[in-house]
Image: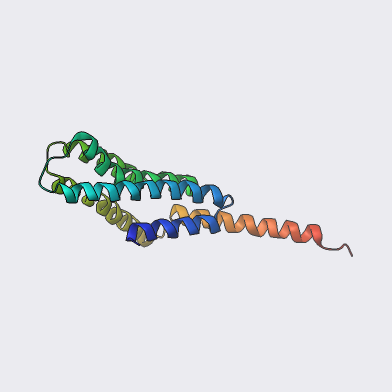
Length: 168
């Protein structure tokens, strides 16, 4: 399993456990990440086969679509779970599209290198924002969701306990 596949598997499992409608999250995230992984694998094969050549437009589209679909799936997953859109992941998705247009004029290996930089930049910016948020004492959207969910569960547990407790 690649790091991307492990990441998708982890997020899919967490979404099933942590959400009220986990099956929907699991299917949406698995489909998006799976599609991105498949497109990335096909794109890698195209790059390996034609390293020094400029790729035709339809092959450039496949190579650039892999990381774009993967980042878009993560953006939609985050929105579905937390209700907020990650601007960094959305910008990364759009950057993959722009790099795809650049890929029409450069060799396949250069295209692949540029497409590798985009997710690495998104990951780096996510870590930077998380460390700043932690230093400022702010909660992340996911932590806010956990707080809301745990308070909902405790209220629901109290209601269920009061409902089922015998009257004195």
